[in-house]
Length: 618
Image (cartoon, rainbow, N blue to C red; front, side, top):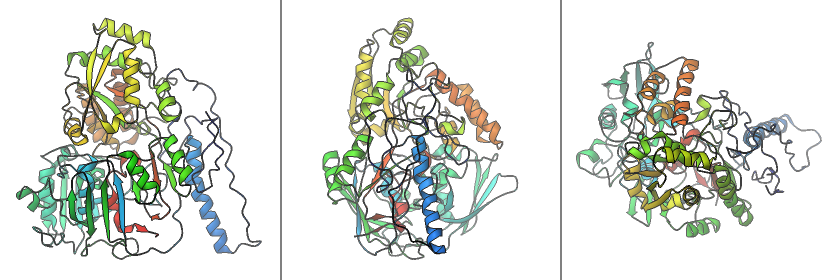
């Protein structure tokens, strides 16, 4: 790998020398291990792991005798660097995981302009999960609970709930009933047909009744036996059994609470009017969505006052080159899907050295090809296994991500293993390696020597180039892969409900983002609406149900490991390659961090939840 001479502490965008990669380093926090960055298969991961030398910041002048305040500040800064930078370096990341918020008093006014890659879809969050469908409602609605976020959220490897519409909550002694105490003084936006009316527990009940029976989020309510409203400010769930992950879905944008008027008047797909911080003022498909600050917003920011900004604008820019150019010149304050690779990040910093690039720890693969397992070709495990063996992931990682990538399963592994899964340590054996000869033997045994299928995809996923590389590699085995590239909204209409005809190149975002249950029930249970891979395995179903209500952490992890291992052994999903998820921030964009673990707090969805504390230093 080519050496990069950037210093890590120069603008916190320093890049680790790419000659050496630490493999399987351990991240602190709940015993979670870091993801390895080298490709799987026939690579040299059996060599001893090398430990990178500590980075040394450029020397700076220091007062001869620091005051106690200065010493405390220096200690805080050093701790922050150890947290944000040291852990990322130990994992082999080229970029830090976070950075301290710069000093300076917030400024009032301004509109944050965000260049997005999606086009607007139907905004009924019970039926949709795509960014173009859920991002705008996130700005106008609130959820019962929230996720802690921002510059001070630490290691990015745990999800911490915080109050939102529910200012507090309590569990019954037996763990089967949770009572939410709703915030007082909450009103819906003063927009027809809500007209600023009061929010109450009845709104939560009516929303929950629909969410639990309609659409793609019903799995989160699977243990609910009763819902009640003891009074206008109190709402209760009663469960059939205690569940360690039950509350987490209610902090996600998938569970933002919409009013009954939009349901009754059949407006939910085209309008989003809630209790949230922003009011939609204009929507033009293919062009923009503009929103103004809700003047009657009930929730204060961290300074105990109303939001700083006047509004927000999503500029729909499907042309990535135009979007990136606008971001580099400062016409945009944030840019979707850029940088998406280490190479892109280096290009950005060459022209904009004062921008910040951050990485997320890699603990799963958020992309995989789903196969219609009701199709006789793909119900045969030999065909699925052949596809795994015929994909040279190491080569793909070198070509697409300059060697900085992974080949991990879609299920988040830190819940079940203490080391990064690999082919060499046996966790990903025998299919996560490259063996074209064995792949051809399996295809011949299955009678599929001339296998041909069509992959449902969208231009966004084809743009990275890994799908075409897979197509070329499979062609060498006699497999013909065709692509049906459709509009992103059309793609999600088939991918999200798991209704594609043959194969689909999709993403994985469970409702319980940040929770083990999202990966070990929602994604794999045959009755889960988030199971997009046609998995229908009675043994996995039984394990998924058992872990869902197991309060013993060790026992629960053992059961989840059985699910993880069987998913790998049966090759139910064809995982693609992945690099560190990267985000970048211009120096004037303040108090924004998309740093939630396991895709729980992602730039594709959470600008509304961030809005109250964001300000522009312009």
